[in-house]
Amino acid sequence: EAQVTQNPRYLITVTGKKLTVTCSQNMNHEYMSWYRQDPGLGLRQIYYSMNVEVTDKGDVPEGYKVSRKEKRNFPLILESPSPNQTSLYFCASSFRGNTEAFFGQGTRLTVV
Amino acid sequence: GEDVEQSLFLSVREGDSSVINCTYTDSSSTYLYWYKQEPGAGLQLLTYIFSNMDMKQDQRLTVLLNKKDKHLSLRIADTQTGDSAIYFCAERVPDKLIFGTGTRLQVFP
Image (cartoon, rainbow over the protein chains, first blue to last red):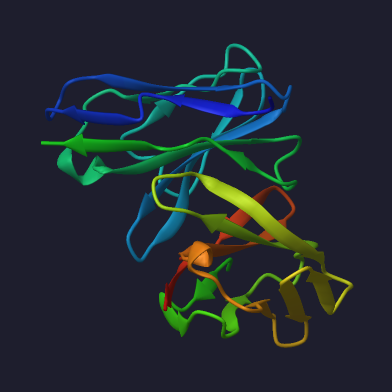
C-alpha cells in the first residue's frame, strides 16, 4: 500500500531535549516536505527536499533541521525544542514539488 | 506574494449544500487542489482542477474556478455528517503547493 509513515504519532518532551520525527515513503517520490499546522494559520512549510542530498528552507525553518540521505526517508530534527514548536507536524511526499502531495498521519508534538 | 485565503468556519444542516470558498494570488498557478482532513488524520486529496477549466464535477463535489478573480470554490451537495472535516485549498506554483488556512465544516442534523 502506498503510504507516508511518520513516527511517533504523539510526543511530549521538555524544552531543550533534542528529538527526531521520522518520515518514510514507499512511492519512490523525489520530493518530500515537512509542514506544521497551527490553528488559524493553515499548513506552513518548514523544509523540503527535491531529491537525495538536496534540501532547502520553507517558510518557517527556524529551529528545525532535516536530512535526506536516502530517497525514502526525510527526518525532522529539533536540536533544542522550545514551547513555540508545540504543533501538529505533517510529512508529505510527491513525485515532484508541484504534483499531488501524499500526507502522513501527523505527529502531535508538545514541548513543555 | 503567494497567499491563499479561506474562511475559517462553515456550519450547515445535513442534506443542504455546502460551499467552501478560497482566493489565491499567484496567477502562475497551474492546478488547484482541495484536500480534506478528518479529525486525527492527515490530509487526503479530494479533487483538483486544472487552471484552464472553469468547472469540474465529481459525484457530490463541484469545483468552480474563476481565474480572473482568482477565486476557487468547492460545493458539496447533500452534505452528510461524514463530511465534517477541515477542507484545505492549495495552489500549485512552479516549485511547491501553497495551502490555505483551512475551513472547518461542521454538519449538524
